[in-house]
Image (cartoon, rainbow, N blue to C red):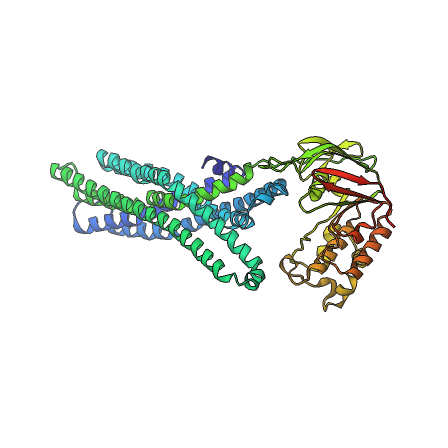
Length: 552
């Protein structure tokens, strides 16, 4: 709670305004039944505390003011809530960017989507319906206790006792017993989202292999587990609600009994007695809101914990700010060894390798031998546990991240495309590129003919994850993106795995012609693809075996 409040520092003036409007609105609300009690007392007894006409005017005025004050409180409170949600979303995205790609590869994407969307959204309850209401309840209850103490000293003490029970004790106990079920529900909610996302993405394979019944059974099982977690929370909410209502009834009965005692003693008249009962019975709104909030906050604090876990998580690689001027783009692996987290076996061990500017190299080897890992280390997705990698005679750890990214183009095995136009997807390689540059890059990637055959051409939307395109078309758009980036180091991880022989030959020719001055590092299982390289390296048993052989 303290950390959530700290996030509000820049919005403190607006929060103070919300609290003031809330207190005044609550006082206006209680003034309505209180004025009614005074009006009734004026009609039925001789003990006139306020004449009937004045009491009626007070009721009408309080009712009108209540509407305006409530509106102002809600407006300012929700402004704060949605403003802070935008700030938190920005912080989460920045945190995810720093964690990428190493840490995010180990996280369920559906769970991350749940955190970014529904978890952050639930914090609105805290910012719009918790902080101000707590302050409002405290100030309002103190004022009402003073008013009741003015009527009778014991009434004030009685009010404070029950305000504390309903507004403090019950929420504290509720929060203690509800925290664990709330966290379990949010975790299960995230896991269910991940499973559904996987199912939607793999729907074709599920239907192809007739796996839909098993998948549906798992979805039903997940839903049942989710409902069980939710039922625990609802049971908890019902118990808290019952205790709250019981305490309110006991408070009213206690004041009525105490008032009757003082009335018989002659120290309290009928008008004061009725007014005290009406004021107390009408004053539990703010503290009841706090008690009810304890139920909702079970979800909210669980969501906040998941968000702060993301914000607090330390990235595998810390980015380097600024700009680094590289004298050249020579690459050197110096006794590099690396193993992934929670794996004892090293993927690569004591790798020694020098790659001069303009070299064309092919790295081959069996699946899982560490070929892609060598590339990820070069791009500083991870740092080696032993040894160092140099670029331009400087350690990658000292090179500014922006400068490193600018020096490298990557065509990965799986091309990630966005639900935007083909032109926008290609321009990710260079956001300022002209249409002519985009078309030229598409020609080099042997995809321009296909794009121009589409009704909307380069303005064609390609669907989520490029779902409207074939795997080969997606791969060629990824190649066009890399050609447009035109970095000194051109990294290709199985760049033609989804292409036919004709398109492969055309792309390899483009690489040879367009990358004469660039360093090319190629990972492939195909001899035909590796043929453009001047040197072939085989990675096997954690070691590189280099063949200083020219390919024809």
